[in-house]
Length: 109
Length: 112
Image 1: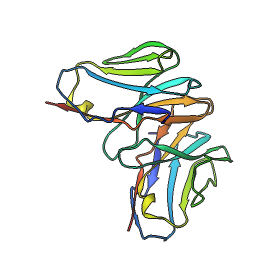
Image 2: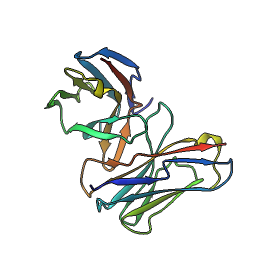
Image 3: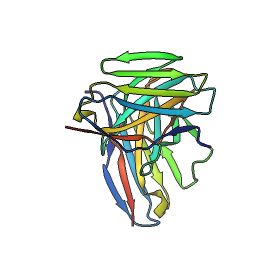
Image 4: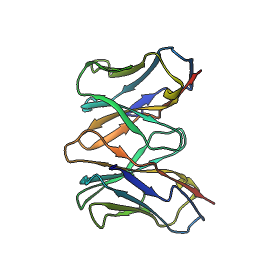
């Protein structure tokens, strides 16, 4: 069993729709829960991270963490074509990041 | 702008021919990482440096080695590339105790 599981998609939505992404994990020692965005032929860039269970909002992006269920989510409201990318969840334990495989999202204009 | 730079962006090498990928950073971060990312797969940590202290992941093949001559530069050496080593190689940095890792644009390695 992989430490982090993420549905690879692909996911295609019309502009303005809500995008919902999620990951599950097995390692209870993970302390930080992150979402990275990776455009084609570029390195991942951090969107946001949370430390504990609950919600965190940053503009159109909302991250949710449920440590009891080992489940994290990212919601993108009012999606734009510029949001088209691969979204990777990542979890940190000490120094190491464990990534999901990424979900490729396309927002259609 | 402070950043993580990787050269070359694309590298083609022959089966068994040694290759070196480079990474430099202007962030003055003391931690540097090398990840391997195969197509549609999660980035996989190969090793990391905390200052000059080298840390190898248990499942990193012996074929992969790394050097960090100073704070700014880090190199990934693949001694005898096989077809299975074709991947995107990502360099990342972080400050001591910081959560975020800053990634370079990656080097896409093709093995023929």
